[in-house]
Structures are given as C-alpha cells and as structure tokens.
Length: 286
Image (cartoon, rainbow, N blue to C red; front, side, top):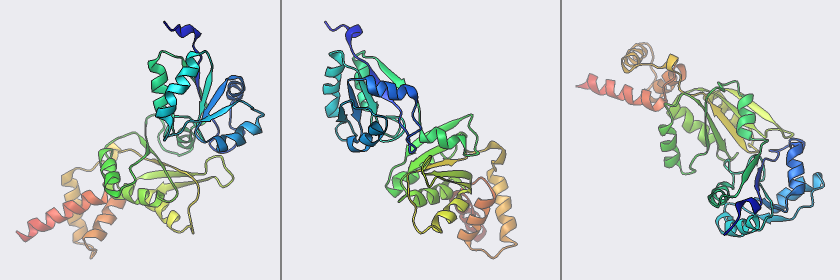
C-alpha cells in the first residue's frame, strides 16, 4: 500500500508574463530544488532557467501530451521526487496547460502546492480603471464566429468586470462582437504586459476598436477588460421605445445607423436596439 507521506510534491509555479525580473525568490528556489520541471515549451523555458542559473532537468507537458504524460509524472511523484509545473508565461492552468495534470495528481492524494506570482488577468485588471471588487475571468472565447457570439450573449447580463484573453490576430473581431452584443461599454485593452512595447488602451469599446483599426498591425498577446452590466444604466423596454420614437422624429438615420447611435448612448447592445426598432416599425405598418 502506498504511503502518501513518502510521495513527492507537485509545485504549480507562476513565471513572468514578459519581464524576466517578475519572478519571486521562492519560485527560483523551488525551481532549483525540485527533481524535475514539467514545462509547456522546454525551448522557451530554457531562457528563463538559464537567466537564473537553474539546471534542473526539463520535460515537456503541454496541451497535446498532458493526459499522456500524467501517469509518468505521477509515478515520479510516488517515487518521492518533487516536480515543478510551469507554463510559457504566468500561472499554469489559467488558460494554460496544467488543469488535467493537477486534477490527476490530486486524485492520487499527492500534495499540490501553488507558488504564486504573475497572472496577466490580475496584473491588467489592477490598472484597467474598471471595478475590481468582482470580476469574471472568461479566458479565450471560441474562435468560430457563431460560437463566440453565443458565448458573449450568455454573459451579457453579468455585473462583474469581464476579462478575456485573445490573440492579436483576432482581437479586433472580439472587440467588434462585444460592442454589438453588450453595447458600447467602458473597457481597457492591455497588450504586451510588462514587455518593452507595453500598452494600455482605455475607453469605450468603439474607441478601442478604432485605435486598433488605425494600427498597421497589432502585436503581442492581448488581455481585454470590459465593464459588467450596470444596473444604474439599465433601460426598460418602454424607456427604450420612447427613446427610439423620439430619435425617429428628429433624425434621418437608417435602422442600422439609429441602432448604433442609441447603443453608443446607452448600456444596450446594438442588436437589442435594432430588434426593438424593427418591432416598432412593423407595428406602424399594421
């Protein structure tokens, strides 16, 4: 019968998201002391380990081999060896590999200890200028357009600050979809956190999108923070109808243009305003 007290420990170690100096003394100590380091990308991690003179043996543990590697790593732990789990940047298992391994190790009643440190979500939130008392981390949304829109629809009434991760290639599409579905909310885009070309763009989603569109190209991983639904700014269906009727009598904008205008002036999404305009127009025709 296995004796859990004789097992090794799995340390989940946070590493810098960019600047190599953003690592804790304890993290460096643990990485030097463990018998093995399971890394998302061994080539990438060698730069960090070399910088701190860490010569611990490396093995790969990424999203494509994590399930397969788990039994081998568990066997090492049961033999009394200590293992550190690291990802390319930030905290493992937070939109990074690690969840499957941690779950498998915990099931075996082997100790799993966090070595806290960097997280792009928390670092960016702290300077976003948006409420920090309550937040909802959503990570990477589905890449396919329809699935992404459904995911956004599902959280449009959530009051906490919303946190998303996205690649530079898809960030403009995400911001556009959020504006259409959530309305033109306050937001902050954090790009290249702690790196040389670190940038924070604050403003409404429409303003952030415009600045992104004006860039020749967008580089670096992006963290996006969006204000949750505010009860103070919530407009009832009847109030919306009154606003639409008033605007229809004073503007020549088409349905789409009017929906965009009202959405930018309220907490309502363009889609919701557009559908209400169509309902009112159909009633007029009856």
